[in-house]
Image 1 (spheres, helix red, strand yellow):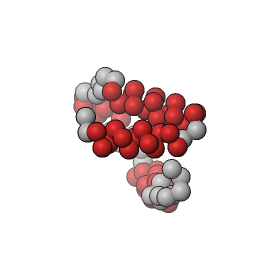
Image 2 (cartoon, one colour):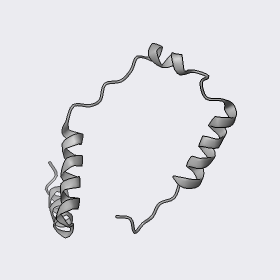
Image 3 (cartoon, rainbow, N blue to C red):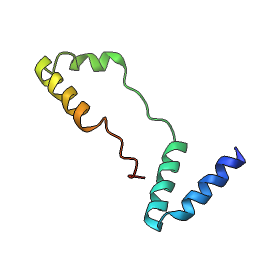
Length: 75
């Protein structure tokens, strides 16, 4: 473990209110846990072609418009 990283994490955690500290703890616990299991490709093939090209285009557009923005003040 890198001591400088640990020190900064502790310093930043002390700045957070208790509810946010608990969220960080939950996130760390989830990262340390067992990695999720994947699904065999054969099972995913059943979903091929389910989404129409127009629906896929609309979803891509919605993602580009709503999810590609970073709010620097959010953290």
